[in-house]
Length: 253
Image (cartoon, rainbow, N blue to C red; front, top):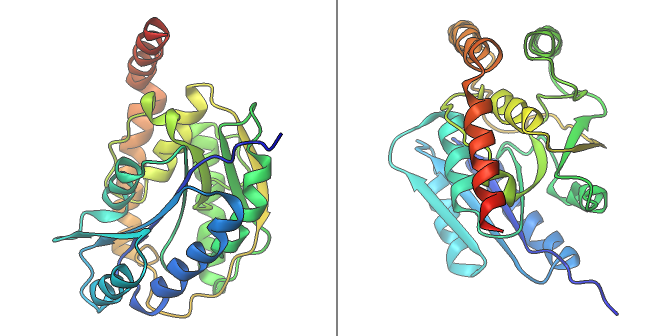
C-alpha cells in the first residue's frame, strides 16, 4: 500500500531579487512534483523597487500553482516571513531566501529526514560562499547568538527550513527584522519541537546585495538582538503563552 505523501507549501521572501527569484520559482515547481501531489509555491515580494514584481506577475500567468504576494511597502525580513507562514496552506512549509544562495532542489534531502518524531528539518551550510568579511561577521554572530539564546542547532543562521505547519498553532512570531529567525528557532526549541539537521550547499550571491552586512544595519540588529534576548531569555513571557495554546489544543482533541 502506497504511503500518502504530505502536501507542501514552498515560499520565498524577496526584496529586490529580480535577477534570481524567477529561477528559484522554476526550481521549486520542478522538484515539488517528485515529492508530493499537492503543492503550492509562493513569493512574498517585500516592497521591491526593482522589477521583481513584474517577474512574479509574469510567472503567475504561466503557472497556476504559483502565487505572488506584494507588500506595497517594505515590512522587513520578519514581516515577509510572517506573511509567508500565514499564507502557506499545506501540511509542510519550506522556505529559503530569494537571493538564490541556496538551491531549492535540496529540499529532496530535507523531506526524508522529516520522520514522525521530527517537526523541523534545518539545513546547515557545508561551506559559506561569501567574502571574507562576511564570513568573519557571520561567525561572530553565530557564536554570539548561540551563547545568548542557548541554541542547540549548529547553524541557526541557515534559512533553509522544512517545518510542519501545525507548529504555528503553538508558536506565534512577532519580529519584523532579521531577528525573526532567532525568535522562530528559540520559540520552537522552548516549545519542545524536535529538530533534524541536514548539510546543504551555500552559493555565491550573483545578483543584488545583502541587506544585513552594513554597519547601520548591524548596529540596529545588535539593539534588536538585545531586546529579543530580554524578552525570550529573561522575561520568558512566551513560555506561558505557548503552554496555554498547547493546553487549548489538547482540550479540543
